[in-house]
Amino acid sequence: MNIVVCVKQVPDSAAKVVVEEGHITWGDAPLVINPWDEYAVEAALQKAKEHGGKVTALGLGKEEETEALKHALAMGCNEAIMISDPALVRIDNLAAAKAIAAAIRKMDEVDLVVFGKQAIDSDTGMMAAQVARLLGLPALTLVSAIPALDPDSKTIRVVRSIEEGKQVVEGKLPAVISVGKDYGEPRYPSFMGIRKAARATIPVWGLEDLGIEAPSPVVLWSEVMNPPVRDVTTEIIEGETPKEIAEKLADKIMAEKVI
Amino acid sequence: MMTNKVWVFVDQFKGEALPASWEAIGEGLNLAGTMGGGVTALVFGKDAESVAQNALHYGADEVFFADDETLADYRAEPYVSLVSKLAKENPPEVILFPTTTRGREIAAMTAVDIESGVLVDVVALDVEDGKIVATRPVYAGKILTKVTCDARPLIITLRGRAFTKPEPDETRTGVVTKVNPALSSDDIATQVIEYTQAEGGVSLTDASVIVSGGRGVANNPSLTPPDGMDEKEAEIWRAQQGFKLVGDLAGVLGAALGASRAAVDADYIPYEHQVGQTGKVVSPDLYIACGISGAIQHLAGMRTSKVIVAINKDPEAPIFTLARFGVVGDLYDILPPLTEALRQRLGK
Ligand SMILES: Cc1cc2nc3c(=O)[nH]c(=O)nc-3n(C[C@H](O)[C@H](O)[C@H](O)COP(=O)(O)OP(=O)(O)OC[C@H]3O[C@@H](n4cnc5c(N)ncnc54)[C@H](O)[C@@H]3O)c2cc1C
Ligand SMILES: Nc1ncnc2c1ncn2[C@@H]1O[C@H](COP(=O)(O)O)[C@@H](O)[C@H]1O
Image (cartoon, each protein chain N blue to C red):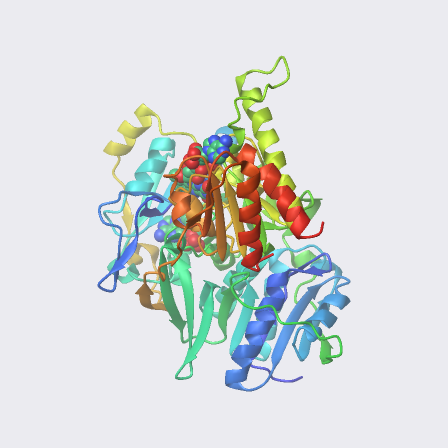
């Protein structure tokens, strides 16, 4: 089994992200692996262990943005590759999907491509579907379990989480999946893994290596803003007894006319 | 066939449309108002005739209706191929989707087919000098962006509950045009084997009222768990007693049940209920947080709620900074009389 897992580097979920002088900044908050992608790496490593094979972590970003790939290596991925090119800075989702799809085409015989559900910076949640479409592969998104996978008959069966419940879907390999948090807790990097990752050299693939033209973005962020300050005055409801507090609070809630 | 410039994809499941679809038709009408013409709804499925009719009631004046076995269970391929085929034959200016799991996916893949851009999970749409400008939250709502795209047809997905749902009018009529599927069953590489419905109850993303519980629901030392439980079992048992109180209040309010990640990770309640950055992003009219501290990742999922009520023992809990009303106290003391008081006022 040849498995590719795509990981992105993002500001920590606890970071204070604001717009200053027209630019987005998160101060000195650390950059980490996109939290959803940890679930994706976990799924990839489990399947590689069950069926034999290797896991390649794939990232797209600036050459020095290797934090997510190093984390994936430390968790146990066998290799990491970075797609980076000056022409790939400030692109939109579809342009990024084209670069990622080109990199997957360049690798030989990939059986499974695994994505996280969503990147917590751009919050688009479309990459798995777009890369699948570009590669002409089935997209099995929002996967919470992979009850069956057979590299010989080239089939995969997944459980998807949708609004109405769970859907069990079967598809042919190679396939593209995206993994949700309900897949199960991702492992922590081991001490050995961290040491290995620190020493790893990560090959960089530019547009020339991918053999594609610079994809041009069509979606533009024309302005970034801090959201309007929520102007709430918090009213603390007090009283002698819980019953008295409850009665007062119930009146206040009714007066808001939201129920 | 008419040539409306605005199309709206109606997301339905087993003959039932998701409410965000009607919100999208409402916003589609606003947009059509600036461009001329009406709204064309896309309704695909099997035995979804009533959804096509409803689309007219909610304001579409034309429906492209595909009724076929291959569209019975949602799979991306047949849905996407049909949207793309229609959009290539008779390109509209804009195709709106609700930001549901299916809507997001079909939008993403259609954009590949028609080489266009997607403005995703949009919360406001404006037309400035004839140009469509969408507002969307990024970085879990810490930042708002204005986004534009010159490619056409432009694909936009609209966040649920960010746009007003129009009033349906059953006297409204329009043209329902039958369309054929773009793929035959042999062309489709995936197969739906089985489907299990989520346990009943109000869906979080559509809910106008949500009552949520956090780690605090397990904190009632005076409860004595049944004999023979180990520590973890006793903790979960306690949490269940707490969630019973949270659930009672939700019941009286017709509310959906939410939870913090800490409550989910401790196995108090299934993941479907998690609100926050790695759970569901919700925007109800009323959000009642019980025993939730208000970590930044939780706030990311509920900060746009209209009225927030917090019940927490700790006066310093960050959740109070967003709350309109707060009670500093024990949820085990406050919830039963609060449920009763609201029951009386609502005449239930
Ligand atoms: C990458 C990442 C993603 C995350 N995503 C999410 C997410 O999607 N959603 C989410 O919720 N969290 C998320 N978190 C976790 C988040 O950081 C917090 O850990 C979590 O929200 C805390 O849950 P809590 O408020 O229930 O628990 P705690 O922080 O432990 O708070 C419990 C609260 O209950 C109060 N309390 C205790 N007993 C009682 C009582 N008897 N009566 C009343 N009040 C009581 C306490 O005062 C306290 O404020 C994420 C974290 C990370 C790192
Ligand atoms: N720049 C990137 N590099 C590597 N993987 C990415 C990148 N952007 C997105 N992804 C993958 O695509 C998933 C969905 O991202 P998005 O569609 O951008 O929200 C993420 O969870 C990652 O698995």
